Length: 195
Image 1: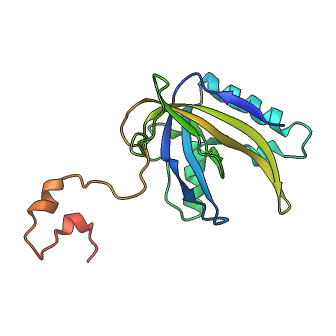
Image 2: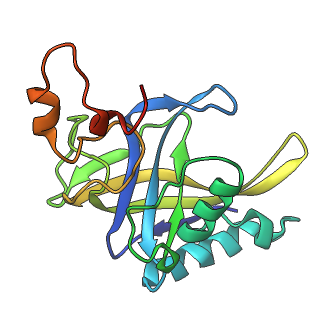
């Protein structure tokens, strides 16, 4: 059973890939995806949880293990235990937020602006932006594993905001140091002690 949810409030996105699919490192397939971050107190979280429960109905799925709605702080702690970089260190009070990671393997999600005009510019949606989503919770069973995931159907871009993720290259705290360093000499402050 699949349950569809359209969020009423905005959430923030991280690493959106909704115009061009991104290769999945686990199975090698390409898919459209993003990470959507919600305040735990948002009524949309209850709607998403209800959709998860509806999708799991009649399936033999342990929702404590397979719930696709994850706490941001707990996820960062898990990643650190596994030797991975945290995802949510730019979130103040990360424990007050949850995230989902909806995706679609074959169908490009519809993307519109706040006035419901189609958006085709791949630079129109960036990390940290506020969006509304239309997603569907569904049960899956593959290779002896089972769970619940969210399919990504539609995205409405509501407004811009600062970058939320910490991954990838970012500007140095003092960009003048890079552009004013004498040619051939690297500043130790920029290298962070690495030589």
